[in-house]
Length: 341
Figure 1 (cartoon, rainbow, N blue to C red):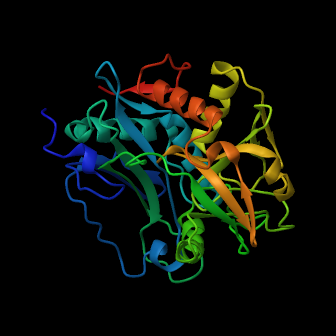
Figure 2: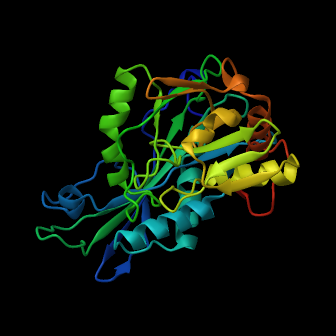
């Protein structure tokens, strides 16, 4: 197939309809085989469980064209396992890990002409998601579910160069101590919308959330995990049972240790430690790493000297190494790259 006539460099991070999506249905206690379909619209009952009680979860991953022309995905098995964890917490049926990976492969292969070419900076974003589809009026789990994956080409995250972010320490909580912060539930993101709009209205790029029990430990932002670099070059990431386990963050910690020979540490990080770090970054599927230049803690500005105007030196090495692995410029650890075509 020839590539679609798309100006890859002008793509933003938004929805562009592609030709195929995967759909599977759970009914009478089992999943059907699923299929690729062309219709992007969903028809469900007005009383569907997802509409009444937000019984839904999702994932996000990307397909890339590597330097040697292959189309690949990055660690889709981890997305499958994380969705399984989300489903178990939300009393939804688990879509089997191996079938999840197969469905990802089918969607990417069917939409191969939407996978941007190597060097364009663009990628094919994949959104697997599941929701309760049958009518539920009492407060209880649905009995029927739909699992879907759609694909959409998205542009480079840093258009026009890297712009370090300014965050604020949030007064609102992201997740309850024994709640759902560790899974990718839609309801977590609904809760964050008021706060992110308020942050933007007040001149901040994102909120930095602290633990809701004591408000003394850093957790994550509304949509990304956080990494820090100490002044002596150690890579540190916050540890908490209410942080979503980012696949990008977990991969970066392995890259830091095994590729760059850096010391790494996952531990509780106090807000009072912020001024001791040299670099800070947000990590996730969309940008890999977004550098943070400043955190504002109720009027007190905490600046990271290595990230005020550009990505800090160690953050840059982490970014270059992981994207090099994803794009096939560097050898990947076993099992990290799923070759599709």
